[in-house]
Length: 309
Ligand SMILES: *Cc1c(COP(=O)(O)O)cnc(C)c1O
Image (tube, rainbow, N blue to C red; front, side):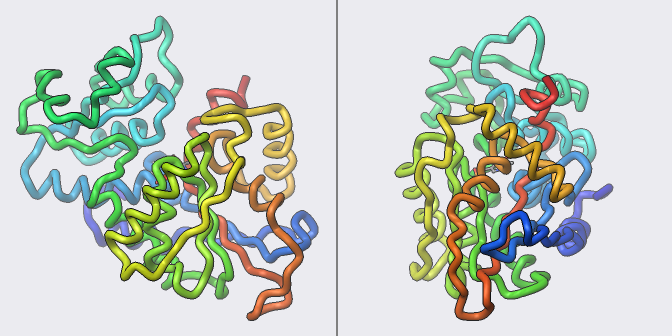
C-alpha cells in the first residue's frame, strides 16, 4: 500500500496467500496458513487491519497527529509508527516504563519511522483506561487517539473486513480457524463472520484466559447476532506473555524449516504449537481429515527480541 485508501487495503487483503502445510508434519489435519504477515512489508498482520479504519477516520477528521500507547515490544506501536511515516501523520507513542539506555529494536524502528516516544512510569501507565489520562500527559484533543493494541470500534471493523476477506478468498471450506490472542479482539471479530459454520479457536499468549474469553465474547456480541461462541484454549501461553522456553524455540526452528513459514515466539509460534498439540485425528463431516486454517497475525519484527540472539 502506497496510498491510504480502503480500496488499496482491500486489494492487499484479497491477495494475501494461503499456504498449505506439508501433511507429513501434522498428519491428523489438513492445515493451511493465511499469510497476513505478508499483507505489507512493514505494517503487518492483524495490526494492519486494526489500523486501516482508524487511519481513514483520522484523515477524514483532518487530524495530523496520532497518539497511541504500548510496551517496548508492541507490534501495534511499530505498525502505527510505520503507517504514520507512510501516510503522512505525526505519531506519538506513549511507552510503558522508563526509557532504557538502549531501546528495543522495535522502538528503534519506531523512532526511525519518526514516532515521538514518551516514556511513562508503570504506575502512570496503569491509569491509561481512566478518564483524563491523555489530558494529564498534556495532549490536546486535536490529536487522534488509538487505544493499546488498536482495540477500538474501528479496529474491530478492520477485523470484520479480514473475516469477510477470508470468506471470499478461502481456498477450501475450513472446519476450524485458529488465531493468537492478546486482547481477544481478533478472535472475537473472526467469530462473528466465520463462527456460524465453523469453529473459531483463540490461543491466549498470556495467563489471562478468562479475561480474554470475556473480551472475545463481548466483541462477538457487539457485532454478531449472539449466536457465535469462540473457543479459547487454556494453558497455551507456555509460562506467560513473551515467555519463550527452549522447547518453543526448538519447535519454531523445526516448523520454520519444514513449512518455510517464519514464526515468532510471542504469538504465532505458540499458536502453531497449540494446533499441533490439539489436533486429534477426527474425520470431519466434510472431509476425511479436519481442515484447519491458522491466521498468521504477523509480528515477525519481534523475532529480534529472542530468536536472533
Ligand atoms: C497483537 C497481536 C495479536 C493479538 O491480537 P488481539 O486482537 O489483541 O487478540 C496476535 N498476533 C500478533 C502477531 C499480534 O501482534
